View 1 (cartoon, rainbow, N blue to C red):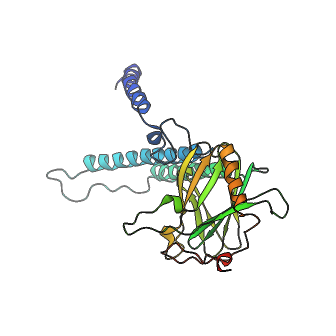
View 2 (view 1 turned 135 degrees about the vertical axis):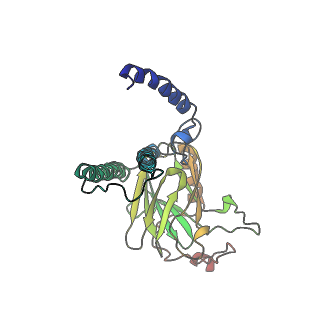
View 3 (view 1 turned 90 degrees about the vertical axis):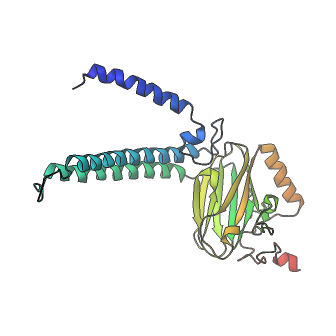
Length: 299
C-alpha cells in the first residue's frame, strides 16, 4: 500500500494540472456552456450565476455518481467473469443488508441534497421586489408580444406601450430582427415584469437570462431581476401555443438609463399611452404576412 506521503505527492501534480486547465477555461465553459456569459465574465442578470452554479454542480455530482457506478460495473465484469473451465453458477449471495442500506441511503441523500439547493435558489429567484425601479407588463398573445411600461398614476394613464406581431420570415427563412417586438430594460435597475396571457398558455423566456415563466389566463405571474450587462438578447415563447408558436419571438435590449428614458419619451410622443392590459383579448394579425387588424387600425 502506498504511504500517505506518496499519495500527497501524487495529488500535487494532479491538482496543479486541474488548476491550469480551469484557468484556461472561458466563462462559458466554467458555467457549463450555458448562454448568458461573455469573455469578461459579466453575467446577463443578477441571477444567472445562481442558475449556472446549480446547473454545473448538479452535473458534477451526477458525473461523479456515474463514474463510480460505471467503475463498479466494470470491476464486477472483470472480477466475476466466467473463467476457462468453470461450469455452473457462482455462489449466490442474497440479503446483504449493509449494501442494501448503502444503495438506499446514498440516492436518498442525493435527492434530498439536490432538492434543497434547487428549492433554496428558486426561492431566492422568485423573491419579488417590493419597490422596483421599473415595472413592466408583458402580454403574450397568439403569436406575439405587447410590452407596457407602467407609470406611477393610480389609473396608469402615464404608462407607455408597444404592440407587436409575430415574426415574418422571408422566402429563405430569414427573420428581420428589427421588426420583432422589443422589450427595453435599463441596466443595473431593479425590474419587475408582470406576465399575462390573452389567450392560451405561453411561456416568457429570455434565453441568456437562464430563466422562464409560464403565462396563464386568469393567473398572472411576475419575475424580478436586475439586468447587469448592456446588450441585445433573444426572447421567445417556450410553450407550444399553436400553429405559429415558432414565430413568437421578441428582442430584449438592455441599455443605459438615459437611453431607456429617451425610449419611453419616444413612445409617449407616438401617443402610445395609457393602460392596454385589457384592451385586446386576442391578437388579430394575419399569420405569415406581418399585417395586423387591431381595432384602432380598422377605424
